[in-house]
Image (cartoon, rainbow, N blue to C red; front, side, top):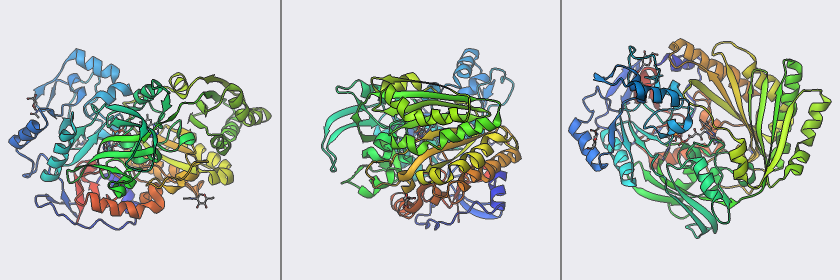
Length: 594
Ligand SMILES: Cc1cc2nc3c(=O)[nH]c(=O)nc-3n(C[C@H](O)[C@H](O)[C@H](O)COP(=O)(O)OP(=O)(O)OC[C@H]3O[C@@H](n4cnc5c(N)ncnc54)[C@H](O)[C@@H]3O)c2cc1C
Ligand SMILES: *[C@@H]1O[C@H](CO)[C@@H](O)[C@H](O)[C@H]1NC(C)=O
Ligand SMILES: *[C@@H]1O[C@H](CO)[C@@H](O)[C@H](O)[C@H]1NC(C)=O
Ligand SMILES: *[C@@H]1O[C@H](CO)[C@@H](O)[C@H](O)[C@H]1NC(C)=O
C-alpha cells in the first residue's frame, strides 16, 4: 500500500460505505497477491506468467491493422536509452521539450498525460536529462492507435480475455490521471474526428431538432468552430477548455462550460452514444435502445460503462453574446477579500441571467475572464454587472474591468478564452456550491474556504482556485440522467489545485494530498452543506465520493455497473463500482481486494 493510501487509511477515510461489488466473474488467471497483509487478485503484468506472449500481442497487432505500438515515452529522445535501446535525439528532444506545456501538442501524443504527477513524473523531456534514467513509470505498456471501431473492440476484447488493465486515452487532460495506467493496454481514440450536423434529428427518442454526431476524438474548439460554420450557425455545450474532448471523459462526467447555464450540461443534451461494451458488443444507447446504459453514460463517470465511439448531442441556435472582464489586484488583504466576496456572492444573480463566468484566484490576485452573457449586448451585460461594480466602488476596492459585445458566442469564445498549460504536476480537488449555499453561506465560502485555499503556505505549497460560475439548472427543464441532482441547484463550481512535484518523496505527496482533502477541500465542504463534488474535476480522496459525486443517483449507477461491466474490464478511480479495486504498490498494479 502506498504511503498516500496508507496514510488516509490510517485517518479512517479511505473506505467509503458502498456495498462491495460481488465477485461475479473470477478471472481464472488473475495473479493472487498479498500486500500489506491483504489479499488481492490482480490484472496481469509483464512480470506475471499470465502476461500474453509476444506472438499473442502480434496477433492483436494484426487485428488492429498494425496500429498496436509498444509505448516509448515521448521524452525518451532526451535520454541516452530506454529499455536497453538508444533513444537520444537532440532535435526530437528539443521539440518535445518546447511543446511539453502546450495542451494541443499533448493531446496529439499517444499516451502522455498533461499532469505529470500521474505518470509518476516519468521520463519528462528535459533537455539536460541525457545521463538520467528514462523508465516507463505509470504509462501504459502498449497502445492501440485506433482508427476504426473494430480496433476499439479488439482492444476491449483483448484486455478482457487476457486480464490486462485497460485505459482509454483521448486527449490526456484528466486531472485525476485516469487516462494513464501502469502496465496497461491503452486505446487511443484521438483519430475519431468524424462530425455530422443534422437539421432534423428524428430519433431514436422523442427529440426532434438540430443535432450533431461527433467521433470520440473531437475536441471542443474544433467542434465550436464547425458549429459556427453551419447555416444557420449553431452552438454546442462544451467545456471552456479548447482541447478537452467532447465525447470522452467530459460528457461522461457531466460536462459544464460557457453555454451550460444557458443550455444545460453537456450530458443533459446527449441523444445517443455508440459504445463498445465490456463484453465487446458495439451498441447504441439512447432513449429507446439500452435506455439504462444511456442514463448511466450521461454523467455516470469516465470509462465506467464502455468505450465511446461517438456521441450525438443537441445543437442550439447561436446567439449574440457579450463578455466582460474584471481584475482585482491589491496588497490590501482586507480590500482584496471584500472584493472577492462581493464578486462571488453575486453568483446566483449571474446564473439567473444565464451567465457563465471563468476566473482564477491565487495569491492576492483575482482575474475574471470572461463573464459570458449569452443573448446580451454590451449595454445589457453592463446593466447585469452594475450591482457588482456599485458594490466594489462602495467598498473602495480597486479594480479594472472592460466589456464588449460579439455577434456570436463563438466570436466571444475565440477572443476571450485562453489556452491553458500542461505538463506540470499537481493534485486537484474541488467543490460545487448551490444557489442555497451562496445565499446562506456566501461570506463563509470565501472567508473560510477560498482564503484557506490561497491564503496559507503549509505542506503542499502553492495552491489556487480555478472558478466557474455556472448554473445548469437555472430556469431549464430537469433532464433525467446520472449527474448529481444538486447540479440542478448549482451556482458556482471551483477547482482547487495544490502544487506538488511529481518526483517528491511519497511522504510529501501524502502530505499534499492530506492538506488538499482535510484542510482545503474540507473548508469548502464545511461552507456548502448543499453542495456536491464533480467527478471530472474532483479529489481522488473525496470522503464518501459516491455520495459526493452522484448523490441519490449512486445506487442505480452501482447496479448498472454490475450489469454492464461485472468483471471490471474498465477502471477509472472513484467511478461507480470500483470500491474493491486499488492500485497497490504506490499506484502501480491494479488489483481487486478479495
Ligand atoms: C485545462 C482543463 C480544462 C477543463 N475544462 C473543463 C470544463 O470547462 N468543463 C468540464 O466539465 N470539464 C473540464 N475539464 C475536465 C475534463 O472534462 C476532464 O478532464 C475530462 O475527463 C477530459 O476528457 P478527455 O476525454 O478529453 O481526456 P482524457 O484524459 O483522455 O480522458 C479522461 C477520462 O475519460 C476516459 N475516456 C476518454 N475517452 C473515452 C472514450 N472514448 N470512451 C470511454 N472513456 C473515455 C478516460 O479513460 C479517462 O478516464 C477540464 C480539464 C482540463 C485539464
Ligand atoms: C505492429 O505492426 C506494425 C506494422 O507492421 C509495426 O510497425 C509495429 O511495430 C507493430 N507493433 C508491435 C507492438 O509489434
Ligand atoms: C515511481 O517513482 C518513484 C520515485 O519517485 C520510484 O521509486 C518508483 O519506482 C516509481 N515507480 C514506477 C512504477 O516507475
Ligand atoms: C435543490 O434545492 C431545493 C430548494 O432549495 C431543495 O428542495 C432540493 O432538495 C435541492 N436538491 C438537491 C439535490 O440538493
